[in-house]
Image (cartoon, rainbow, N blue to C red; front, top):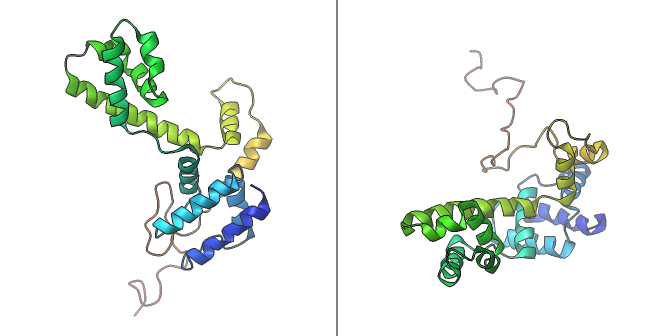
Length: 217
């Protein structure tokens, strides 16, 4: 997506007139940096879907999540994955995991690998096993969603940072990343509670407003 295409996102101000969305060029530039890797047609569809179903303006994370869902489709729920696993157990049994695992969808396969094919086949408590599979599958889904949302450039930066002792990170890429996360977020939209990770507005340095409890008699 280029800057000309992204300029259409100024329409957010029209959709949410009472919220101080993209108030200036600096804000537009920050949002462009955070979203420029996304295909414009898919991101535009995500925006239209958002304004059709939500009351509040989206965050960058919410737009990235919706774009990933449109581009890649919804993830199968744990119930569908569990049906795949039970069919594979009946078909292949304990002794043929090398054939059973490839027959599963990627997330079902990831959950089975974490639990263990042998443990699934040998379990004598299907209710407990099903509950365990659900928990593991939902963890795998959350990780997949997060992975879809993260830009490839950011993944490269994270990989460069690595644990202590790894090669020095790409400082140019890291510096460009910092511009996506200003250290002074704006106020929350009127009537909207701060989202997870948002910092509440700092108290005013002027002290209590006139007419409040701090007003002298």
